[in-house]
Length: 418
Image 1: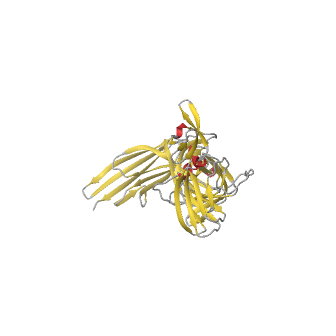
Image 2: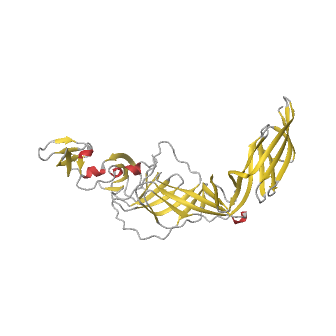
Image 3: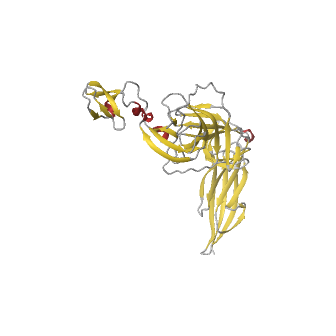
């Protein structure tokens, strides 16, 4: 019965593929011409190790049966041929009779025996270890029609990477974005058609392998011409995910990361210092954090943001998927020039209630004014009086802290326990 083989060829040329690349995995797709008989898909050991189990499908014809097998492809091709057996310092020719258990025949005696792989020498360069055997899927179908192979793999993935550059004025903030596309395999991939997908997409995590690529043994592909530099189109939303088409074919070299400019967000930024803390009936002091409030005019897929403030690296943070015009607030560690001193005085305390007077002093040692936001969280039946604003979480104090100056706010909290 004639079979169409869709497997890795033991050759150095890159494979063409259609990839839909997610942050943690990739959907691989490739068209298959019509053929009589079975369709056979082969992945080498490295590629099969990246495959997410149960996701390899043949789409088009009705599949009547699928058989998955492990096969020694390279040694099988040497059955009936002469290989060489090392015995101490001597090397003699033998016939490889059966690859599965390395049975050989001595042509001088006609006898058969088994050998270990490390005693064999070959007349040609052996392939890399991951290429010597294959995992094979035999698809028995109802009729010969054009089909498509698809599966999910951990071999390829992408992540956004952002750099936020802030000048002396918040209005000068600029956010640049790159899409880092990774290939963790030892094979080059020619990506004919691809798109990046952002948003939360969960796949089965148990027994996860890590990804593969197939190609057709019956096809010959000429070396591709130099492709134009690919670019990434604006995102299109659907079903809660965003899809970004890569406009040209490109090469994804083995064990590499290809970075492409991604998005052109227009952002608004507000810098301030602040802290959020839970209520504590004891006095305390410390430093406030460098804080940034960021908004973008387009969706920002989840990724790492590197922040450079007035030309100086001040830290990195991770942001989740952030919708257009959604506010994202993050901190980048303590600012040593801005401190707080929180003094607590107990006014009364019984089994039914407690009343505290808090005096908060904020001090700015910088030569420029700063926006400050101090937040204190508490719950229950609490009454707030004084120079603070009640919030759903507790209280907030927002003010402009003068250059080289201090700011004091006083407030009283009454906790009712019954």
